[in-house]
Image 1 (cartoon, rainbow, N blue to C red):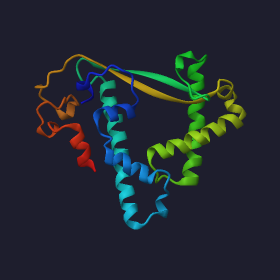
Image 2: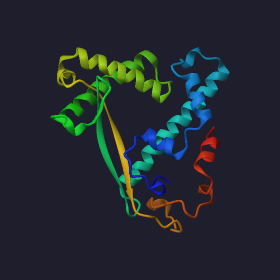
Image 3: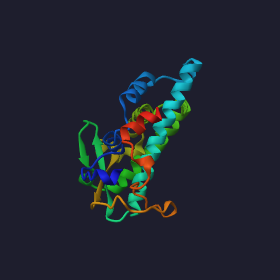
Image 4: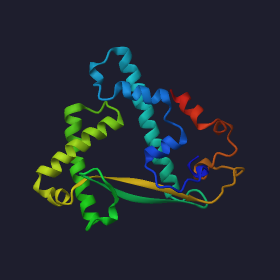
Length: 207
């Protein structure tokens, strides 16, 4: 599906999920309903819905990770993945990370600070929360660590808030009649009737 889009813009994983139509109106409303809600404070019925929506969200993230990884491995003919690292500064401006001096060192240091922040968030809030909510907490804790810990001084001096990745899929037209060997990971979905339904219908089926 990603390759058939033939989209050469650089997008985040979230951007590709939007483009594929997986984020339906119902799904977005449910996410807002449970945003920043603590699982243990919900009624039993709401806990069930919370868990289902969380599982769908995690499944979509894994789906995108796996799909991009297949393209990264050049599983499909004439399709490659170009990846770029971006940096967000404290003034909320976004730039290609290449503008930074010692970009690799700063990125490595940021990942260490983020790992510390993640442990703090899990200790204080647990793991039962939506991806966007968890990222918001982690980003907040990470900013606190960067601004207060001497070993992350270079990040603070460069006004780095966080890093993120964008991806572009470079592809040629593909043969939709190609046969598939699942074990070889070369499938384009052309002959599988289960792939004939539109992506938006598949997303509604999830929910």
